[in-house]
Image (tube, rainbow, N blue to C red):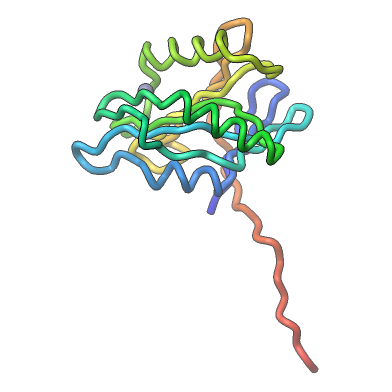
Length: 171
Ligand SMILES: [Zn+2]
């Protein structure tokens, strides 16, 4: 599977196959399929975020064809759990029934809301939206700095190298 790399100024963000596969499992491909979403968790180092985990929809989420309201209490539990594993919450993802997704006014408002209301030491948060087309075309990724505004990037795609495994061979 592929790894998608985004650049927002000095910050490089890798969306790893492990996280992408969770999103793709909920892609709104069929008619009447509901929006899905969850949170993204990354291991952080200076100017580099590696998104290892995307969580999926939860029972407490309210989902429709054109909206997704997550269960905020369940989200806090996820944040606590992944924090223990060294992963930080760096933003939300959700699906859209559009080929190439565009954020709605509501999406921008809720991202700004999270930025304002959450307590963290991050320079900003990511917004990720998965449409119907395959990534990278069908995936929106933007960075929303603390001070306001937005940066958007198209992904660079690279094959995720599997660790080499060699079979022992007797000559
Ligand atoms: Zn949306």
